[in-house]
Length: 170
Image 1 (cartoon, one colour):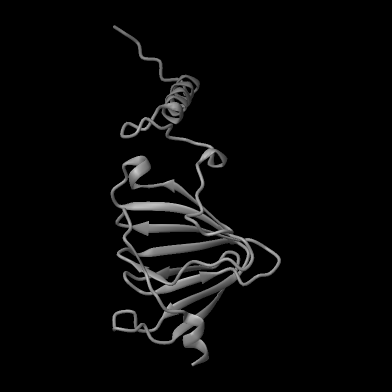
Image 2 (tube, rainbow, N blue to C red; image 1 turned 60 degrees about the vertical axis):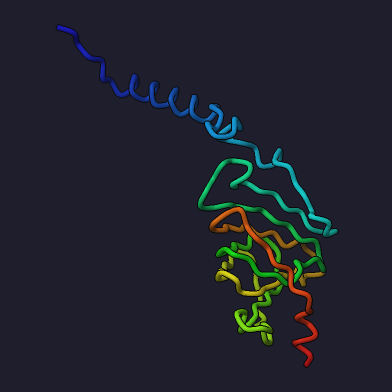
């Protein structure tokens, strides 16, 4: 008769080895490590001075099909263009503060007067599919950093050719 060793120490060692092997194993779809150091992820500013964008996990880089995660940092005064896209977004403000402009009628010919929403550390908000919006770091002294989770990558972005601030003063 073969006796099985099921001591907690042996099981813990096997679990630890399995977890360690998994952590350093490459992602089967892309060959990238499954666990990565965020400071080593490439950044881009997409031609917008003061913006740092990094795709933490996403469709092109990791072969993900349902969700993408971004980390974006805006220096004081920096903002996105007014835009809309074919996905939902969830934002988590990690640090800093700013203003979210969200169009009141994004599905009409003109998006209407935007609603202003103050955002702050630990706040969260979501943007529905195709709603025109813009994010500004209105804090003069601190970067605004947000974690963004988007659905249905890759994202199709439509930049709108009008300014919310002109609608606010009209």
